[in-house]
Length: 459
Image 1 (cartoon, rainbow, N blue to C red):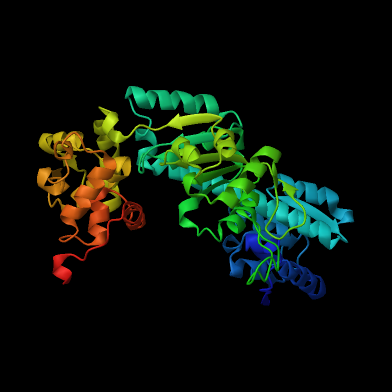
Image 2 (cartoon, rainbow, N blue to C red):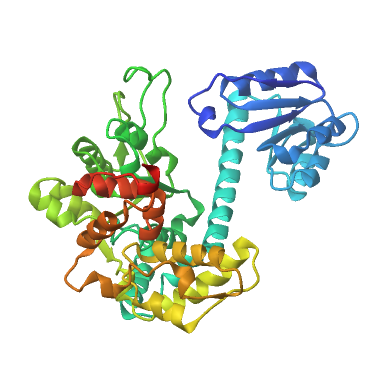
């Protein structure tokens, strides 16, 4: 038994970074398969028998390629020990009937000897991609099932009822959707719900935060690049459009996209074609695009900060998520859905919440929306030593709606809160109290010209 790997990354195999177990008793054939797969960027391990393969544990691989006739047992025996891992059976022409029987017993596919290596590679890629999609869909289904905001976001309030109706109508189409709403309202959850209800559920869901990628890299991240396209591009790289082929690409914070990337995105939406940076020609992609932003794109268009033609191309269907402060009784619904999940994650007994604490949560302005509510409940559960969360555990004394003083908008509230508390709280504590990330806090400081101040305890 020998192990081998080739770390040279082929353009196609490297993107998968898959591990393949080769089970073949002929050393020459086994070595040739491993060498060819290694050239494509796959990591390989070798075994000469079923027993040696079992020692390596097939479940730790992404694909098993096994000869049907092995010294100690038929290769098909590995199917039962490769739970969730596809097994590709290699057989001779004389035993095609046996190979068909292997398919009935759970083999993913078979290929006949003598085989062409290109045929082997194509079959391996197909099986790996199918397995990846199965894992992706299973993981997404599990995420949706345990992600308590996804149910709560479709609340009982009239505004969320309209959102639910629109999601139901648009999910089954391939229409481009623009999702608008303040930070923390659940824009990505809505995008995932649309994908989950579409014909593309079998394809990947690829989320991209446009604000988190530097302007100089956004085009190559989205569209890929060719080797030598720029300094440091030592190998070709597929973009996220290619990764989302057959599925959905979710462009979060689309308002942060730089003008050159806006132009490329417009062409991709219009023509269904993508050209990698440095490439001479384009290739077709089958991708549904969903976009989201907390910014006023119509205002940006008027100011020249966003392309008008791209705006209308994205805004085939518009879904506007209401802020939590406008969702009435949904706060109680969210509390009831989130609290048991919070208690389970923390390994606590079932927690309850006092009437006074619930009333304060209903009265809070929630500048961070659902995300802030989730953070607040988790913090309260940690601080609560008993089984009942009360007002003192919430940490909202400085932020109920009454202190918005009516005339303050969200930016004014943010400025007021930060300036009043930045001398006593760290950046992490400020972000947590506002229900946003540290990065979002920094970005808002930059946009609003609020310099950072160290808390007094740090001086």
